[in-house]
Length: 301
Figure 1: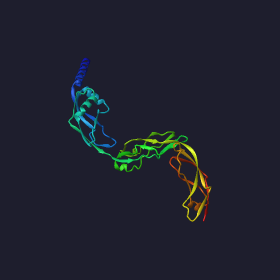
Figure 2: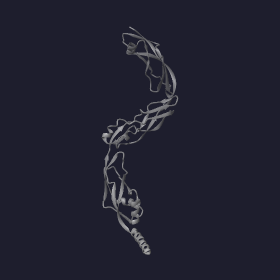
Figure 3: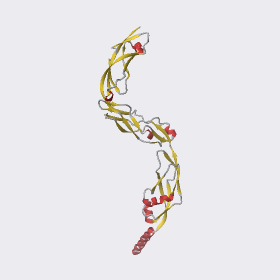
Figure 4: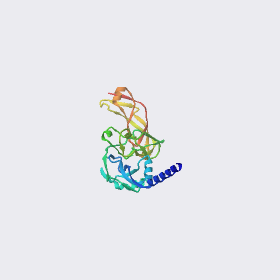
């Protein structure tokens, strides 16, 4: 009896080996992943993501495929800019063969995959620098305005979602020790992540910061009374202010237009002692101080 069982077991093993080595047809679900299109501007509206294919292979290969945690995946490239396209399934056979070693033949009852893309809505923003702090080295300063590149960033997504986004700032950042003109790569605040399927045309910008060295200069400027009644005379003591200004080194040769004023209505409202104000100076200068802190104003009718 024991000998019979051994012979029976060996026979079963041989039969199983022969059966497993024979080629048979199996239906296998193949995952489809679409690539090659602009996922920022377009969304995949309708497409087959699983394709049943008939493969011919040995039982060993079919068994190994069944042990895989995930189905084989094939990449399908969508070419061109058409919103409607079709891909013949026969063009995928080679990729399926490469995905699993040992496949002898591949076929499919479906002749093509049809893909529909939809163009996302869009909204253009000018990135703001309100949350960026530029800290300059001693005696260096901003000369002009920072230049942001690209000047405009586009967000793509559903129109109703985009309407809820009011601005696109550069992320809170501090740039320290600036002593020369140069560009900085700064990330955008990812406000789009707070919403649904919204994509940005870029996630960071280049900010060029023009820098110049500055030197301190002192200027004597007459104090002007603004808004005075023509029937009165206003005397200011002292009659001129001392301005301490930083001047861009390349502009030291220029004669600046500087204006220091007191307002006649302030004299009437607050009495004789008024704080003078620097009301006009060129962009290549930086105010450092104004003396005196107060002036005395006397109205003579």
